[in-house]
Amino acid sequence: MSTGDQTDVLARLNAVLPPWFNAVNPTPILTGLLSAFSYIGSFFYSEGVYVQLQTRITTATDQNLDLIANDFFGANNFNRGAGEGDTSYRNRILASILQERATRRGMVNVLTLLTGKAPVIFEPSRPMDCGGYSIAGCGYGVAGGWSNPDPTSTNYQCFITVFSPVVSSIASVPGWNINYAAWTIAGTRTSWINSNSSTNALNAAQIYQAINATKVEGTICWVSIVNP
Image (cartoon, rainbow, N blue to C red; front, side, top):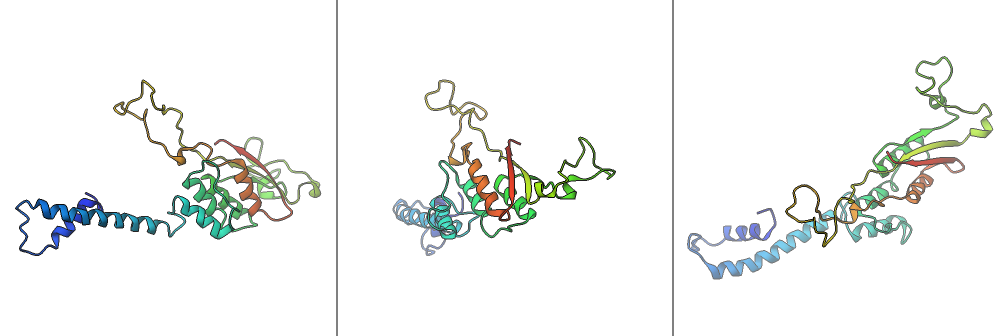
């Protein structure tokens, strides 16, 4: 029995019955009548829990996330990708609203929220990224990077390494009518899957969209998307 299910609601109804009902003696007619009310009560409770989840982006599900995206970005301006599950779509929405923009920190925050892993950003004109000779900690295979002494060739440019998100694999789950699959097999050989199990939950176009929405206008971001 869990809070709000039919058994719980039935128990709550029995608990407030007038004292002349003897709970020890079986009352099949009364129980049947109260079971009908408890079924409706349980349905209303579950609907209330569902509606409460839809009031926040972090917990909203199903078509409600699409409605939230339409409210923030306008109809059909930020659609769910083909086969994209709620988790991926929610992360893209959160990475695109009320976020710091036009800063390096903002770019890191957006891509981290989107992929689950912080990106690596290299700005050739930034000494902290390139290092320099005779500076502790810099050297081949240690830290630093090559730049160009001509500032006109590297100004307003950066290189971003984005790590694609790690998704759960479903390759080992067989389909229906496979003779070696059964619900009684130990382990994870059989499983129910949903849209969040899709391996194409986040694509390159969506990553580029997030970068373009965050970078400073007039700058160039060279992007490499790699598997972590």
